Amino acid sequence: MRVDVVSIFPEYLAPLELSLVGKARTAGLLDLQVHDLRTWTDDRHRTVDDTPFGGGAGMVMRPDVWGRALDDVLTPGAHLIVPSPAGAPFTQRTAEALATEQHLVVACGRYEGIDARVAEHYAARGRVTELSLGDYVLNGGEVAALVVVEAVARLLPGVVGNPESLVEESHGAAGLLEYPVYTKPATWQGHAVPDVLLSGHHARIERWRRDEALRRTAARRPDLLAALDVAALDRHDRAV
Ligand code: SAM
Image (cartoon, rainbow, N blue to C red):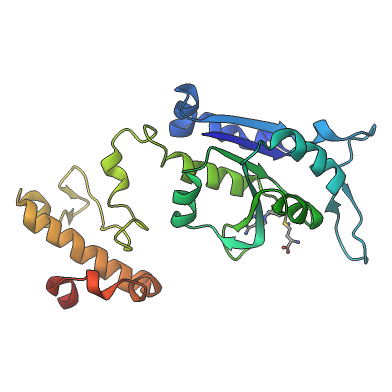
């Protein structure tokens, strides 16, 4: 997969050189390029913003600068992602869908955001999705780019060493939060690991994990529980 991120703060994306995403890049599983939007400015001050039409506070990112950048970076069939607090919520389902793409381009806004004509213009020519990380406002789209790239990259074949790790995760196919996990020592600060996990009885361990996932989801995210397909629940699930 190829991913291009365009930002006025390319250094903000440095963490994408680390850990699994960094390794995926080195291994050639992810071709990630970060671009400085100011490369596409045409004035001495390398201006990317201007005052908003209609007045009001803040500055808006200029469509002409973004247009030059995106015309250069987008390839036919690429999917343009525009982080925005007014976008569709970014979820694991979105990450799964994006992980099947050949080329993503992430346009990181700053200030009051990018002139609205940019998304309109490219939506008439290809795919554009405005994505929100959540109901809060960040200073710029770079953090959203980090989140989207990491969530998508870990779903690419070969990026996570053991693909089993992706199966039972929170927000996975089961629609539940993951059960609590433990490691050695078996007792720490007087807190013991649940006995069943030391039993070696795989069926019981599986049942316990499923029960805990159901309980946790009911307590923390009743919205996820309510969205579960009732037909997919077995007799034991209903008893939890
Ligand atoms: N005035 C804009 C509004 O109220 O919708 C907020 C602009 S925000 C200060 C600057 C940039 O940060 C946005 O253009 C977007 O790229 C990014 N951003 C802020 N909050 C975000 C969120 N919740 N999800 C994704 N991107 C966000």
